[in-house]
Image (cartoon, rainbow, N blue to C red):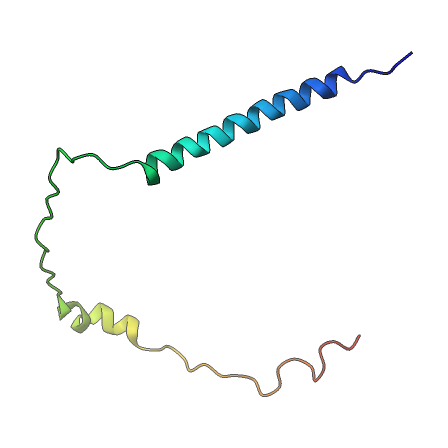
Length: 90
């Protein structure tokens, strides 16, 4: 009495079909995007003129900004940080 693996064979057939479909789809997309000659364009590309940029530097002189910009307290760094060899066990 032979043991048949019909479920595994069916799964392999389905995977082979799926992989074949993906390969064909990849080749079609590559042909469409890279290999195919582009046709004449019916729409002209219109590039708008660059816009001018105006900056308002008066905000930097306002009282609210100057209040925020002043440091509240100096930052101090402690003398000894960490251990001499951090890989030694405690």
